[in-house]
Image (cartoon, rainbow, N blue to C red; front, side, top):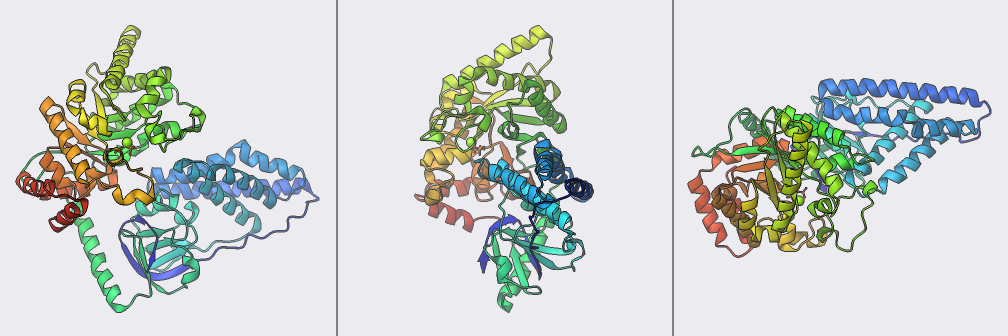
Length: 568
Ligand code: PEP
Ligand code: MG
């Protein structure tokens, strides 16, 4: 068995087709006829643009607009004067078109691949994709036609570029295995959109297999089996059937309310990063947005987004949700999220440093721009403001004072907004949990951020693999904290939601029902799974389980019990 990153859920079983890498060799000698070389280069660029826009259009129709944006991004990049213009300049000095394309792309690749941010690093793979496509056009190399592989094919490649992935026909491809790429890589996004099981980053897989080998791709666990024995194969055929049955069962929850087995109505919201994701949330049947991570607007830009740019984004999300709640979290920057143009200082302890609401209150002018944009967007839907990383009462009071100031300004300017716009706290620090009773008096709602609450309660860096064994929301301390926060919110009569990953964890859901959580905010793709699990538990059953759990001493005992009593 080989292991990789589980990038698209499900079980795929089929016959391997290895997508060979072409050698992109050329003679880098100086060219004599610069003019005809420029013409050859321009023709290649035109061909690239035409092929890319055709593929984008095809993806838009077959898969969706969000996925098509990946290729549209390639068109924007290649049209940027700093790319094609630089290539043209190199050709003017006598370099051949291939060498010019390679040098400029390598320069950008080096720049993007060194960036800390995941999304920016993703740009590096876009550049690599553009380079390979352009070189193939210049060298007259034809790709394997992925669109015509036989049904039941498992594609194996070093990397699946968006241009290759765009040719995939869902009905023919049973699974995907690659040597590079992670959960957020473009091939992962496209595989998920096509619902094809995929395991990425399996070391050396292209050299370990050959065409026609049988492969099992377990995209849920990240396991790959090549030429498995009869037992493993039959085990996985059963698993595949179960998975398909489960997916069909989940479809029954589409368009339904979120209710427990004994009829308690709960809210099932989505976590999003861009206004475009709001559409996804609606398509996935989310009942609102419980967390709009506004920092992506800032990270995906090379300048601070203006009030108008932010307003347009928040308004788009509010309108997309058509009156359902949209909880916008104000800039949560710092920690592991850097924005190069803000020139934030390097810190010894970034997770304990100048970040999130601390940074925002220290940079009031820019914070006011964001708050104004959010308050203005509240005229177009049910927009709420959420403050991250609160640790003391003063912070939420200061944010509310700024919101009041903004409301006065907007009144004076005759700009409309929701006068009752709610301001809530994210409870994600140990301090906020301990003073949840005090914060509840100042807040219109709470949302528990378990990703950070676990980090700060356990004093364990959420991204450090060496201490990952301690990073669990099922630790008794974290569970006590969650229970306490929900109790404080309920005592004060404010709603308490959860937007950390734990809200969608099937093992956690009964505990949250028992503690009295009223809003679950999850990744859009997990809406139906969460709704299905919620429907299986009555309050009385959840209470009985929670009582046993809260009497246990260790995380292991807790997880073992929850697994033993889980409802599939
Ligand atoms: C959290 O901390 O649980 C959370 C939802 O926010 P983020 O993961 O963006 O820190
Ligand atoms: Mg957080």
